[in-house]
Length: 415
Image (cartoon, rainbow, N blue to C red; front, side, top):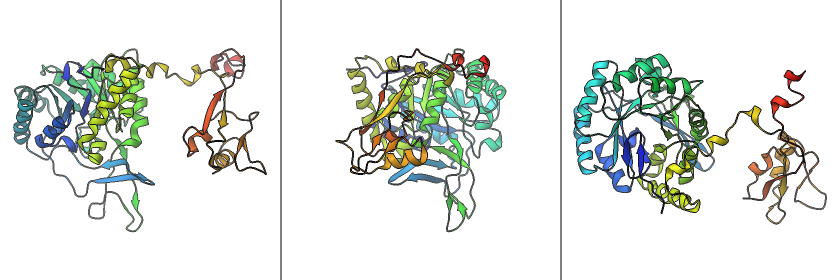
């Protein structure tokens, strides 16, 4: 059976599945329940000068029958005193010494950072996560994403922490930047032992058309918030791969962003993560989802004759290339399985109106056919088809050698 035990930047845990710093890690009660359910680690909800939250504070994007496809929040860091949090941190670590307990922090001054580090290390915590990602409320006070968006400040504050901390330091990065490598490399220069990404994305999830108020509404007004959940997974995977493939970046990465199933977690490992953090899925379905994560990833490793979860690290990221490096002579075309086709003709509509007019309808049949001479292999028909494996993309042997854009005759460099 595959080994899921994890050593992430010196932080050991029974498995690589951690709770992200968020509402599910707000109290010791919650984290202890999570550890009992099987979670390997947890990142405590961000400590700092206690704040006051508003009501309401969540809104969501749902798609058809899928609730909470994306979750938006305008909740801030802990609203409980440092003393109360420290008391519960001590209790959790005493009762669950083998589980990873990482403390998320956000302060303004060097002295505040140092004081919290000392007090937490005295309790035996396993590491720290620096919250440089919160995109609302705290950034207006010069913290959160205001730090993550400024590499110079990111490096300086990270160095404040690493000069005092004896436990591993993780920097949590904001996705609200144009180049994730800049703050990541700044964190590395500041002495961080690892990074985690992504934090939430700036968002307004929608408008109530009856009241004409943005969601979530606070006495008729609202504010932009942080977007998370399944909808952000593609963005997280892209940024994860950017760091994995950056030759100058050497730190381990904890992946965050839309992880709900074992398949999601496996994708993050394949893109370069060595631990993953989960928030929205737990807020939606509860702590029990960790059972699926553990069994699913373990079975996947066994099926692929892999002994440890780290064997997956970065396999897919290595196959991600710049567009200019892709083979322009590689060709696929669509194939419709008539036995599986339900004659909905959605593929025909999509191709006719939105793609390349390469699907035809015959007078005596409701089953569409592919115009192989004009099909460009765009894949749209297979994506809209409601029947699994009804439409597949089949490689066409062109007998042409691999051709990339740099060598293509249409490249302006050759004109």
